[in-house]
Amino acid sequence: MMDNDFYDDDPDLLHECIFDAIVIESRSKVIWVLGTEKNGDNYYHGGQFWVSSRNDTANVLDIRGNSISFQEIPTGATVRISFRGLVLESSPAQIHDAFLIQIVAPPDPNYKFPTYILEELQRIEQHRLNYKPKPEIVIPSEVYDLLEKANPKAQIAVGYNLETGSQAIHIYVPAEDEANISG
Image 1 (spheres, rainbow, N blue to C red):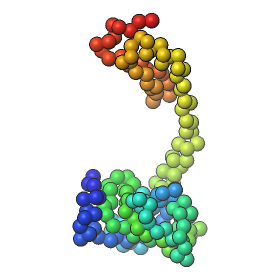
Image 2 (image 1 turned 30 degrees about the vertical axis):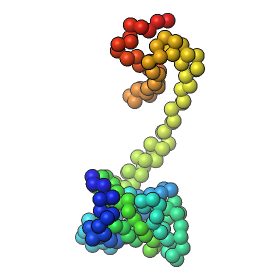
Image 3 (image 1 turned 45 degrees about the vertical axis):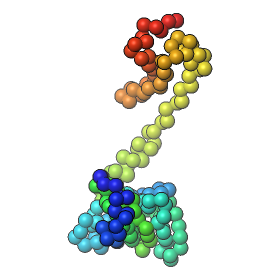
Image 4 (image 1 turned 180 degrees about the vertical axis):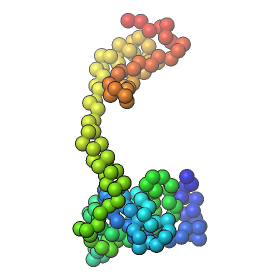
């Protein structure tokens, strides 16, 4: 991955790219899109992209040209994305330098996302439904006081076992001080 700042000094290295895509999902500062057939047989046809704007500078416009937020772009709408910069090759690919995103067609009620997109949306929704934040472990100040008295170099950390979901408090003591812990 290359740093885009390298290219910012030389506008000749940046080419403006414009492509049409259907919005799969919109969030507060990013949209997930699927390139349309209208792009012809090129990189953007059928590709998935996370599109955002560096420093939140993109103009995001509705079909009438009014300014809106990323979140106001409806799922299924066709958007025209204009950007300069690199496309980060991940899955989905990432575009961070969009400067104009405009809705060019409202959602088509007859359009059906490809099966692999629907399956990914189901997987994401299932993850959201099953997500349970870990309860915060509060370590009483008395524990810190005892540890400080026993060994000022010792440290406390909270750990999680990702397989079991269990939590534990870990006390780290520098190896040369292990013999000095008492109590």
